[in-house]
Amino acid sequence: MVARALPVLEVEASLQEEAQAFMADAGEPVTDERLRLVLLCAHPSLPRESAAALTLRLVLGVPTEDVARLFLVSTPTMAARLTRARKRLAGASFEVPRDLAPRVAVVCDVAYLAFTTGYAPASGAEVVRADVAGEAIRLVRVLRAVLPTSVREADVEADVEVDALLALMLLQHSRRDARVVDGRPVLLPDQDRSRWYVEEVTEALDLLRPWVDAPPSPYLLQALVAAEHAIAPTAAATAWDRIAERYAELEAITGSPVVRLNRAVAVAEASGPEAGPEAGLTLLDGLVLPGHRLPAVRAELLARLGRAAEARTAYDEAIGRCSNLAERAHLIERRARL
Image 1 (cartoon, rainbow, N blue to C red):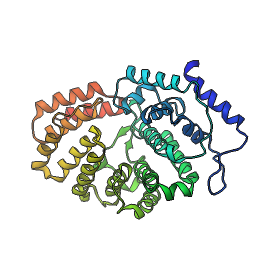
Image 2 (image 1 turned 180 degrees about the vertical axis):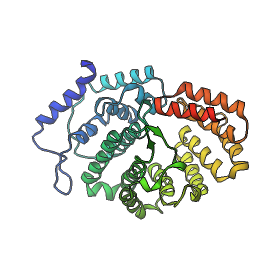
Image 3 (image 1 turned 45 degrees about the vertical axis):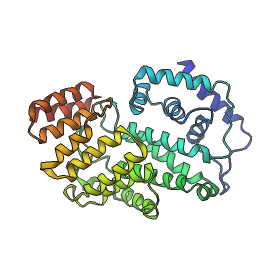
Image 4 (image 1 turned 180 degrees about the horizontal axis):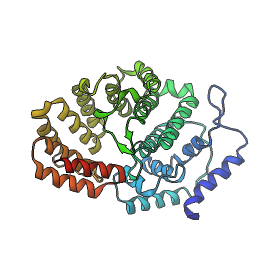
């Protein structure tokens, strides 16, 4: 425990010794200590993924098990990576960076991963940890406020991605009250949309409006998908064809298996009740992912096709893999309905 805390203690000591705060173009110091710690842990000597994982664990207190799930690796593998990252930083100089540009992307990744641990906890009994998600949103707000004009003008993609990330988080966070009823998860199509926070949706759409025609980038595409859900008056009116197209663009950019999973869901919805499930299952062929979401989606699509026995088997796999108690109970209930 002492060894794990040491890098953070060194950073905090270094911050106390700083004679001058980092100054943004607007003349305002970076006074948010958590953002300063994240910026420092996003050290150029670390690979981007290691910097994000280390910051989640040491600065934001995300359990190693949950960090491992976010990066799609086993807990022992992630523990080893964190140990190597800590050793690599052992002799590093913990100075507040004068140039934010090289670290903006890492801070964005860290913030969104932290948001994910609150929006969709991998373990425990809670469906949503609104305080964790809210802290991640605050982090991005501070980053956006202190991002110098010179960085925004020199790196348009960074400018787009920071705005898009904040919009994405706000859109997802706006549904927090509707996602839980009596401690049980409520899927997006079944949510009471009157419980969504309209002011957060409005702010997010305003953030996205200048960038709708910008070149595609990861957070922008994800935010545009979330916006499609937000602007649809009802779940039935959702433009699944446009969502499927966005996910296809996103998969081409990232190659992420998680994006492929989400694309399969969108394609299944866009293709209609007859052809949709088969189209979705086809996209899932050969896909490998840890956790319960892949077998859960496969189970739902199989159930729609009337292949009850196969659906039960897939649900059993999902239930066995699920560490979130509320989601596990939800899966058990859906299996029982077969």
